[in-house]
Length: 153
Image (cartoon, rainbow, N blue to C red; front, side, top):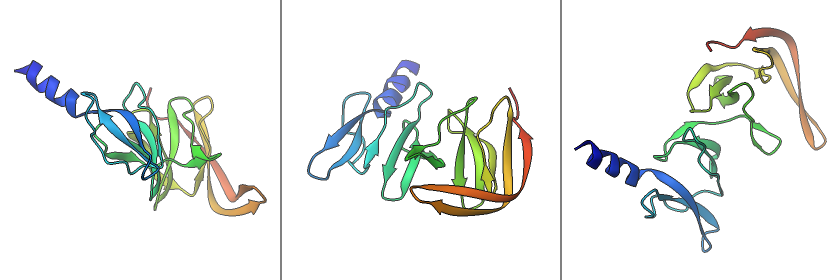
């Protein structure tokens, strides 16, 4: 019985991106080789070993799991998702910025106006922040900064 359930579960999981030339979009095939999602993504990344893929749809960047569910919306840095540093990357929501892990689990909820990546188990977070365009790049100026520690192992 467990083998049947495992086979059914694997068959419904997303595995490989495919390209649809008519729409100029990407979708995903299941691990069984069947088309599993419509071609709705402008960008469709490969799934990581931990089961996340970075995609872009009409709402922007997001990480999806192997069942196509949105797990988290990453902070966009240098034209793509924020890189993982010390196992965490920054995410954004209406509440601000926070951090998530490589499985897509929120480790620190969005609560900061701005946050820098972790280095040596610590990160600087700002409040009273203003964002300004600096030509091609954006910069952030915060009235105050404090340092937080990375939670857990």
